[in-house]
Length: 241
Ligand SMILES: C[S@@+](CC[C@H](N)C(=O)[O-])C[C@H]1O[C@@H](n2cnc3c(N)ncnc32)[C@H](O)[C@@H]1O
Image (spheres, rainbow, N blue to C red):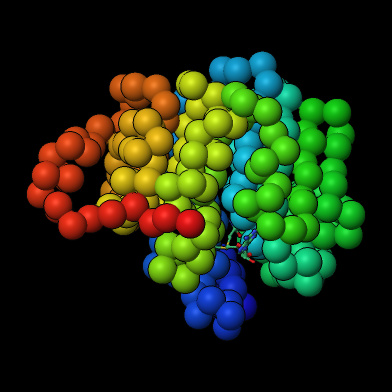
């Protein structure tokens, strides 16, 4: 465990030689500003919200979503689907030192860690232990309002950032859905753009800029002129399987 700059703990993966969150932006803060807040700018008023949380990791994106629900008195039905390869990690989370903001979700954290499942009739959360690439193939077209794209970085875990991977994501995200990611790499944006996503920057005063993407035109974010980027970087390529 590593203390990040907002006072919340994240972890370091020896296997990937990477932290689970930006230690500078802070684990909880990063989840909120790079994933939850931009996503809920777009989906807040829906009766039912389906989120694909790639990948569960320490569970911050899922738990920060619940926190946002509580803080904003949201009542819409929420379904979160989250794959995670590392079963031992998920098991260990009942002992993880989470920020105090997550204290009210202790029971949920425990159930997800022990059974990979929680359902109280309004919030339904499924943590699938296995490969995200396989997991996403089971969903039908237009399943998700939100995709939190939060795998380890394209350089250390490229298989979750390829053009073919984002093609599968494009099939299952709704036309008006939103994808959020910390990655600002041109290769990531290209892989999304080549699958007909529109690409935007998500920026604010207290965090490093991130990316949002959608099959739809969004007025809430600053659009990136991808044709211009491509013409200035003729050698740039998306990752491929
Ligand atoms: C950056 S961490 C996710 C952080 C997480 N979103 C959070 O908020 O705590 C990336 C996670 O992806 C998992 N992972 C790597 N390859 C995977 C795959 N093919 N399928 C599912 N999970 C994978 C790793 O085990 C790791 O827990």
